[in-house]
Length: 223
Image 1 (cartoon, rainbow, N blue to C red):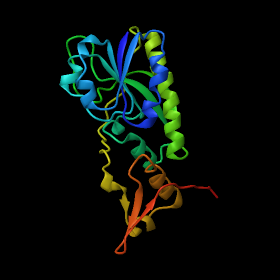
Image 2: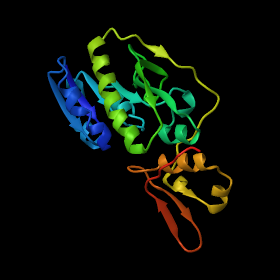
Image 3: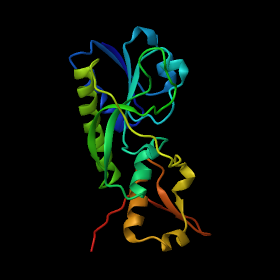
């Protein structure tokens, strides 16, 4: 198989070498941007593997190549961007890491990031600092891609149910929190807010009339 591997954050890029060595892959290339992907003759490759992408691929890509990715949420409400941050803020400690399809088999293709069709999955632990979670996601992504390639094209596909609840994608400006908002939170809620915004994400910060206090890393102990 000839595959394109697309990742832009370091934890995803770190998955590439392991996937490239899979015995079913004869040729692979690493891309870190949409521009790099679109410069390639996509029809000459068998599959596009994405790792850590939260954007829609667009018809210009999914109409030309089979595309799969990894998605780090069990509930559909977190399918619209920044799933790690939203789940941690909501107090979720364990979720699922899954292979999902950007495209359907046959003639019906959709250019959306999430079509509720997934194959292999593992449990993902959302406790600890962001560096711990991303290190784990590097490992689970390797497992998921290897399992998927081992079973391809006979993978068993599932559909997770659509919810009425939608958690909108967080924006960089959502990293700001006021002293008044903090006063209404307990220490565990504060911990979850700041740890989900550790590097490589826009750090959480407290702003007042004098300036902004950025919280780069936090530690928490239960009583």
